[in-house]
Length: 277
Image (cartoon, rainbow, N blue to C red; front, side, top):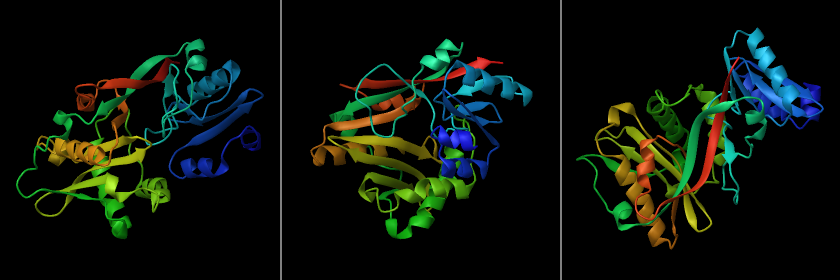
């Protein structure tokens, strides 16, 4: 591990990952990598020899494929940036060249889409009777986070390459945002019994809103809840004098791509890579 840290590895991050995943460190003169024993390679900054060593170790562990760059779980850093352009907030920095040269093929593509505050996106479609839409309450931070965790586990249970994480890891991931995120840009939707069934996490980034995560509990699907949350965000962006929103890091096949609408455009592309071992 000392060599991995000397190569720029973050010991605190490694300790965090090891609290709920099996992880090994790899390093050589070209860089470093984290090897997650279920078959993913993350935190990779090395060359072909280091990537080959990671693949060899995964074979020894019985893995039949390697996926990367992926820090073990889609809750954490993954994807490569495809093409050039000004970096967006909260986007990955890895590049695809090392993976392509090593024979990896695209496992999935993702996009970030800019959508202006069009009349279609701003139109209030209303919520079902008894349902309410409110902002995140920072005075109830722990309770709000617990509710979001419950929604997250349900919302993404069948999502591409999703795997759950324990609540302490989820809390550790979001606790640093306490006091740093404007609650006016985080929406929570509740059912008639006052139970949180969805949330929309966004933040202002310069002249636009970065629309990061929209999640609905599976029991709330099909009730017409997503569009009211998106519309509320775009109306608020328009009223604040912002140009629109970047719907961020969406799977290329995701229904959420429909949020673009008229005048929308892809502003960034990303990919994750896979190789049979």
